[in-house]
Structures are given as structure tokens and as C-alpha cells.
Length: 68
Image 1: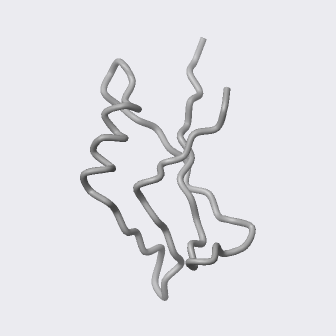
Image 2 (image 1 turned 120 degrees about the horizontal axis):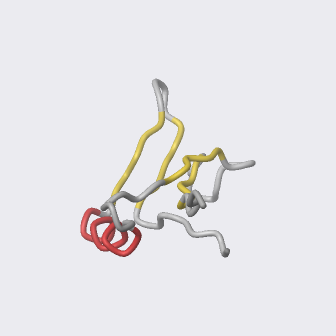
């Protein structure tokens, strides 16, 4: 399965943790599309190998694993 990412959120390492910026309307729309039959959407927050040109140090990948 192709990897999916949560694109309405940006993450940057801050002094005391990870800073998160959210495009609220876009996030709501993304979550509606990604939720499973129980209403959940699962994600993994991963560290980038190098910061992006905008300083983003982490990204959110959609966890598509399902038990058989």
C-alpha cells in the first residue's frame, strides 16, 4: 500500500518539545477521509532525516495497518 501522510499539520522541534501548526479546516477534512469504521484514524509521528527547507523536523504518516 502506498504511504499516506497527514498534510495539514507541520511539526518542528522546539525548545521544550515538538511545535505543531494545524490548518484546522484541512485537518478536519483529512480526518473525515481517513477514519476507519470505528471512527478512528491512526498515525505515526516520525523524525525527518534532515530538517526541511521550512525547518520541519518531523512528519505524520498514516498508519494503515489492520489486523487480519
